[in-house]
Length: 254
Ligand code: PGA
Image 1: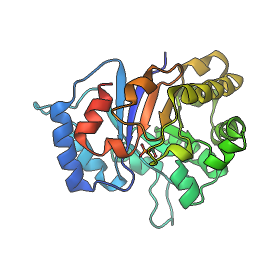
Image 2: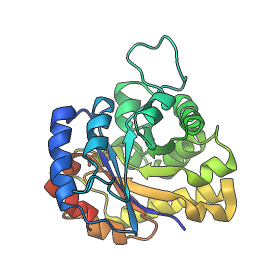
Image 3: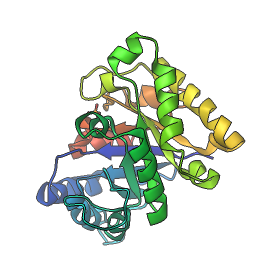
């Protein structure tokens, strides 16, 4: 059975001090729920602060709250100034890593081949990759959405074993909906998620049913419940609306 996952992508926001404040408010308001996993993706320098703050008042860790990093290098170590590796992220307390976010693809020139190598590096390190994919507005207008997202899916997952594929997470994030306030409708999201699941079925058969496919792109507390009710939408990857504890707590409760 696939898991419901609510993931917060803070991008380049919240250093350790802001993270400590966020976690204080989040931990105070968070209700643990067995039916969902919450994953926070702070900047890598803030992982320790997020980990320290992910505790109940009695000091025990909050159940169902995990941490991830926003990017890793595909090599495990070496002369790659500025990069962090899978084993380092794991050592710092991460369980997940975002791979191929559209900002990485567009602003940092990340390719499908690099995404595949990063997914493999994540698995080597014991991290769950969250492979992000989505079409641009121009691609949508040319009716290329299915072709683009299935291509990104197959390429990004190409270096994984069948078992690794089954435990990976996919995030469909239409580029035109990220940070724009323009959300895909639940029906739009469902349609693409169904296409992605069918592409997964070609790769791993019935086990495609176990893969969580998240939607991302201007998800907020106001539209989270509707998106989560849509068939084949198994969770959300939230940017802007995850930056304050109050907004994030209401999405976690949606
Ligand atoms: P947004 O970002 O929620 O601010 O649109 C989502 C993402 O980029 O993961």
